Image (cartoon, rainbow, N blue to C red; front, side, top):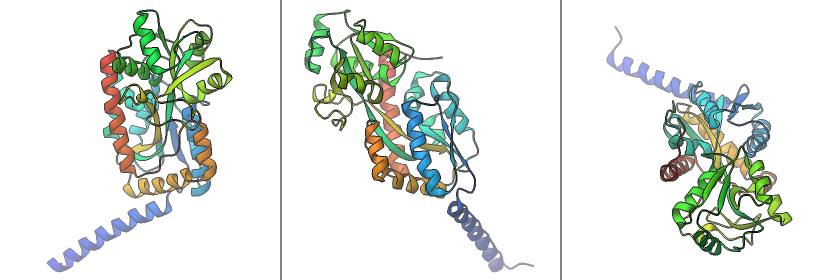
Length: 324
């Protein structure tokens, strides 16, 4: 018969062994390629960020971080694939603005990003740019608000599609400034910008990487950036919040994993990602894409995800947009 003391010792040894196995797993991780799911086609800003950071993680950790593009349903197909994946650290998600917006925009999601995705690390926060066509007389945000109010139903707000961050940045602006415009959605920002250049639409809150070349060329005019701080890429352009207090709309990127992924693996990935973000070459490339690196803990990123989801919920509901 096993004595009570012996039984307790055996149980303690078992727990210790399990803990050791967990630590060993994290220490050895990764021992095979990691699948990094991006919910968009190759070539866009989201995909570029994943490939930039994924290449360095592959080099640092000795295993490939393989980018798997799974576009569809506004990023939801890729996210759902990660939610349902084995929580072993070998499937991760490129978390992006659609994750925060879709939580309210889609009425029948089969997952909850705050509940079902474990935050690993934030990468960067990229501003949109409040940009007007050259024939719009307003030179400042305050002048533009006055112009819209003096010309009701004559100013069109272009976007890259219903429910995108480009669209909802404009909806937030209307909600907070009282300047009402007609929303004109396009199938992508390129088509919207073409019509802006032709004067058919007057305003867009486009992503920095796709609009900045037109601003630098002088074919479109930037009035403000949507982050709370000015952008290093457009240092002379003020923020929307300088005129509309409290306004903030940006694209927050990072990495997440299935909810029950071991904490040790999440912490190891967080440490490695922060090391990559601190590299001068990576920092310079992220700034080129519109935003400085955000170095922090998984908990920091988790708080950001909750804050972004709450913020966009208010805007989606105020705009009355939804997708079944």
